[in-house]
Amino acid sequence: MLNETVSMKSYRKSSIRPLMTGFFLLFTLSGCAVAVSALGTVGSGVAGGADYFASTSVAQTVSYDYDRVKKALLVTLCKMVIDVEKVKKIEHGEKIYATADDLEVVIKLKRITSKLTRIEIKAGEGLVKRDEATATEIVRRTTKTAAKLIT
Image (tube, rainbow, N blue to C red; front, side, top):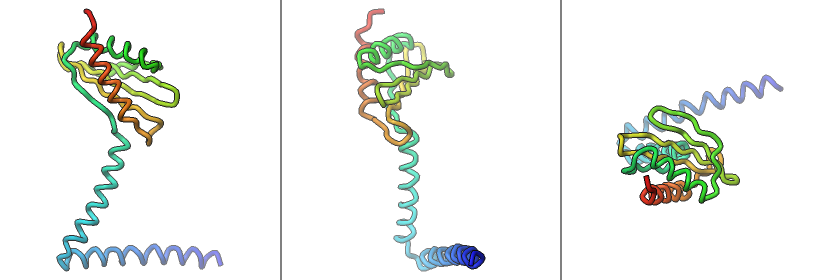
């Protein structure tokens, strides 16, 4: 009985592949571009969704020096009651890890030139649930605070 189950599963798997290949060839050889493009659209939608979950972040380059932007960011996080957990050095800047209740925030600050700094923020709960609105608000408030800072 067990051997029959194993052979049935392998039979089913091996019989589906040629069938799918046959349908694909039928569509492409018959000139049915609509069906082929629909298959491509579905594939690109899946890839686009995976890209969205992997990289949904808010980024902006601001016309202030690195130190000013970092001070403004720390003031903003304090006002928003977002706690800095860890700061890690990266090439030309820092990566800041912060939390607010269940929200995880990862901020990259990079020095572009002596007067340009790039802010990139990912906020969310875990890998899947991203919060673009919070990330946008942190960038907006940081830029506003940087404009008001006295240096």
